[in-house]
Image (cartoon, rainbow, N blue to C red; front, side, top):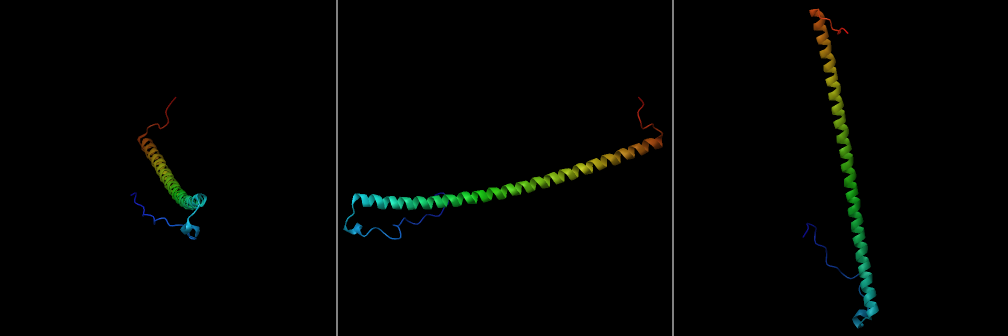
Length: 111
């Protein structure tokens, strides 16, 4: 119903039901047999949940690593863009200073 494969029908434990079942079992034996089957089922569920949690943790770690790498790349790009802008600003100031000197303008303001 939720996209997962249907589980195989439950079967009795590998050793099968007690031999006394065909001859009739006491109430306590039936409860013990049911408790054993429930305990085995819960153990399988715990194992399945543990595997799912481990898989989710691995996926989250991989995603976090990918995000860190992407963030580091973004910082490097931003830093390179800042350096480039700073270089262009210095070059522009040098060009303006050179033009001002050629024109005879005093580049330093008077107090």
